[in-house]
Amino acid sequence: MSHRLAIALLLTLTNLVITMSLQATPLKDHLWKNRVIITFSASVKEPERLALQKQMEEKACAFTDRNLVHIDLLQGSEDFDEMSQQFAVSSSGFQVLLLGKDGGVKLKSSTASLEDIFSLIDTMPMRRGEMRDDQC
Image 1 (cartoon, one colour):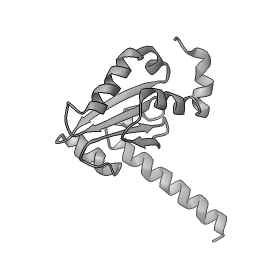
Image 2 (cartoon, helix red, strand yellow; image 1 turned 135 degrees about the vertical axis):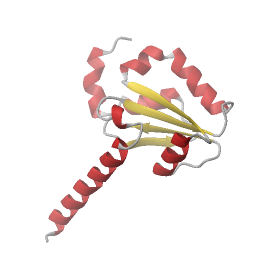
Image 3 (tube, one colour; image 1 turned 135 degrees about the horizontal axis):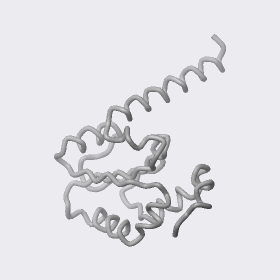
C-alpha cells in the first residue's frame, strides 16, 4: 500500500472514530450545528467557572452569534466522569474546552476568558462566513 493511501486511510478512520464517539455523548446533537464550550469544575464555587458564566451572561448576543452552547459539568456527575475521560481532563480544579462544529477540540485551557474564545472562533473559516449575519 502506498504511503499516501495509508495516511488517507488512517485519517479517515480517525475522523470516523472521533465522530462515532461524539455521537455516543451529550454532544451528538451539536455536531455540525454548534460550537460547544464545556466547563469541567471541581466545585460550583470555582472562581474561573463563575467568571466565565458571568461573561456569558454579559455577552449573550455575541455568544449566540457564534452558535455557541455551554455544557457545565461538575465533578461527581456521570457526564463529568465520562467526558473528562473522553477528553483527558483532570478531575481537579477547572478546565474549559472549546469544540468546533466538527467536534474537534480547538482549545483546552484552565484560564481562558470568553474574549479569548471569541477571538479564536473569529479566526475559523466557517465563522468568517457567518459574520455577515451577526445580530450584535
